[in-house]
Length: 151
Image (cartoon, rainbow, N blue to C red; front, side, top):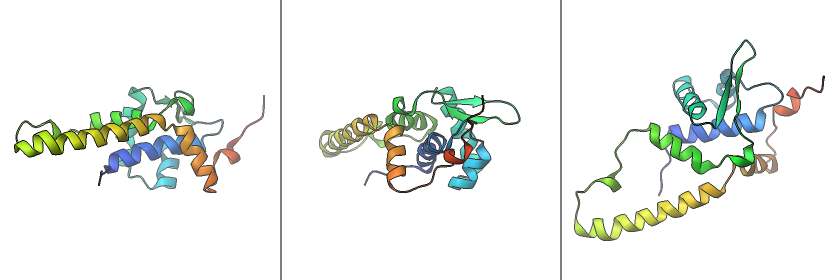
């Protein structure tokens, strides 16, 4: 029914990957590509958009990479959806003035209600929630191998 674009799926996966697998070091884009299989052409564009939007922070240097810019419980899936939708420049048929009266007055309002319901749910779902789901699913986190307790 509601379709999710590749870019949006990749963006959610990127933020979740960083949240779930980051230890004391930033996560490098090559690590994300290896784990998630996200093509570099999508990855770099999505990473930069997420940094500009304040979801991720880029860390420069030889051991640089990306980390969350905020706590994972303060980042919602709805935020990520809005960021990627702004990147995608396809026109939305809901915004076009053309169409039959049944479509404009019945179908489009129904679709708008469904989208609003969906966005409310995504706004209530945090990256922390997704990390907990991954943990419950038994997905191993790279963070357990990256912990550094040295002072």
